[in-house]
Length: 432
Ligand code: DSN
Image (tube, rainbow, N blue to C red; front, side, top):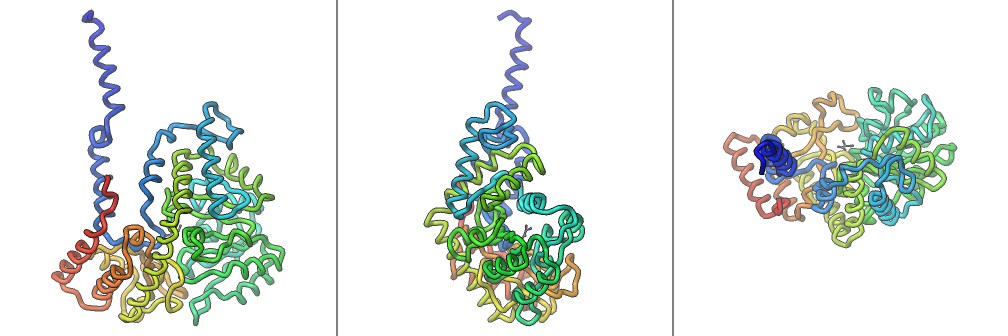
């Protein structure tokens, strides 16, 4: 080989070497952090109610070559060439989601639950229009009208809450508010409500004042898919969800609606709010919907609810007070006022023994959201990991020791070991 060609050949092969290097070689620093997070997930009892572990299939699809493809537009109506394969993938995701929930129309391009909600507002409302949703500090969501969120800034929200005595939705109060304000849209659904939501009642209220109903089922979508919670799809004009909570798919969003609103929703997402869809995430959603139709998934949702009921029962027996006195779904909200702890204190103490929860306002909370009087606990992730009632008993015991007793540094060490022993029986992502 002539010597004047050698440096070029070398340079070329170096470029290819970098391009084809695995993450651990191309970027050991980043790879180390990813491993560190995997290790954190493996070695903690994950009780954050909105979290879960995505299936191996969803993880693979989300890290596939589909990330390379631009596909602005919709199947068969794209603004880029080379979309024939991603068209098939998007259609697969749509058809599976329609089948899973019995929806007339589905948009799988929303990047998140927030964008999904934004798209419904954008399609259905004019700036300044009135709508109703649940107060954030009673269990609602940022996009349900928080003043500093786009929702609270662009639209006129009238918020409803929970009955002070029962800790449950006050449907009569909601009806009164609807009659008083006659909103264009009523939003049902919550981030921290432990009880079954009566979507039929919501639909009756909305339709009686000429409003449309949007259900944000992000938290309970997996339960709905498995028939463990009343289905909002039939009775609402719009349903939004994330795909990473009880559904155990990739971090993303979806919008379901009646056929007559399909055009408005699709236009709101693209070109209204987003550009190119994340086709690797759309593919991961397709994988998620397929798995959500299996018997294994349904069993897991049943166990999620059973685990939550068991945890709630044990915590209450040990002296922890739960908002509404228990749970019907995958989560519960502990009010720590009577044991003299704040939410942030409880979150930190539990973290020290390897249990992850989040501080959470309780209805009528007098403490700010950065401190709070409560914590939210949920069972989707631990159930995916394989926990059943027996493990929930152990988790409850550890929580009660940490929150209700006096723990020395030695106790914390012992309880941390107990958590480790419990987790050791349930390996997470053993292939990684
Ligand atoms: N942030 C989510 C939750 O924790 O419930 C809602 O989007």
